[in-house]
Length: 332
Image 1 (cartoon, one colour):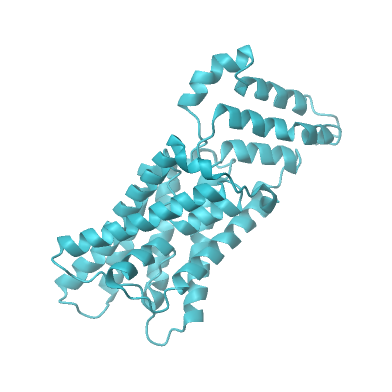
Image 2: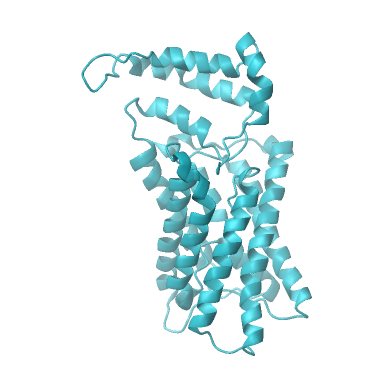
């Protein structure tokens, strides 16, 4: 179960160079995304003299956010995993792919990135308003909550399918553009009703700069609920289903799809923690023809441990190479 893999982490994570670099990457990616997305809306308002929303404005917002998110995720993927969204980070936490302390670090960086982007826009445009997200007439807060839950579910489900799932294969290459596309499509669907945030940080920056907090809680509750549901559904139905048993699968998920960098020692400790439970499955695993498997799973796991154990000759030889390619990045 994904809940069993949730990790709190330690406050010391905040001082690790890898964590700091990841947080800076999230800050920059969020700044890029919000500056382009919010800026496109401000530019449209200027060109139309602040006119009422129109289909053209909705389409331009959809395209701008889709393109900007594609770039923001891509440039952060190899450093932080390219979350660019507190809800995505929460979904990764629920699935056991990032610790709580690192999640908090990401959230702070993401919120700051959004605020700074809006401040820069306000200054660069000569004081134009950075409009906060708001509900359209006739749309209640609970209508908007449902919109945000469903849209964020689609977003985080897409993240899991194209970026987190260890079976993703070559489809991981298109993860950033798939994520951008689903956000753009959801803006076309929900933009006219509640703005289609799907991202608490995107809503937070304009709210801070314009100091407008009407129904702001909607843009936190909806995305977090939708992200949590998507993470649980994908983890339980698709990632945890394995002929080698849940414990073996947990090792593979933890090693191959963690969204934060892992050191050699962390990989070694992770594999050791599952060795005893892997042994329980050895006698129960059978091939489709009813015979015992030709490959000893426990031996494979032990060999894998040696590869990442710095105290063994095999691990010592591979240490440098692993350090240069570590992390199980989100998008590869």
